[in-house]
Image 1: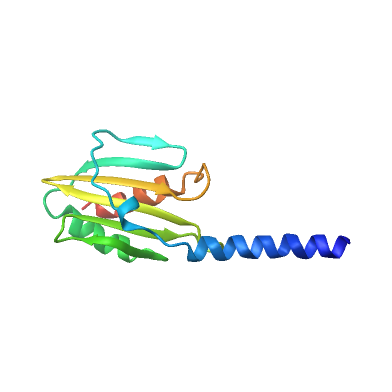
Image 2: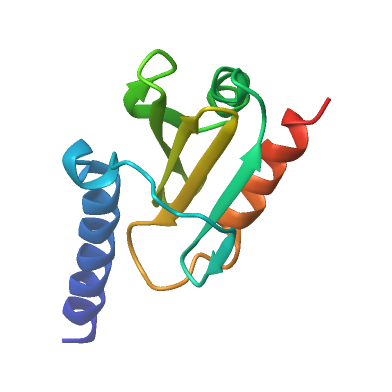
Length: 135
């Protein structure tokens, strides 16, 4: 009986891991225009508003795409808005980061998909991207 319970638990953990890695990411849900007007730190993400000049999105795109396990979900520099998915190394938890150019202003919203807290992972990644963006 104990072995069966252990195998059921192992199966549940594996199934959850497979779901986390393979769950579809709907651009209609995650690739949305940003309206934030102030920096905000949240339990599951972060918002940053920075003055970068008109080329901020293009420069940040190079930085983001060089980040391990980061891919583009939707958008482009030409569209003026890009949403990235960055996955954690071990389990593959997806975090979504939307970056939008508005004149000289860059708006960034990074957030988790699963759970309630990201333990500051999104804040740290966005702040690293912004530090790399500085001249």
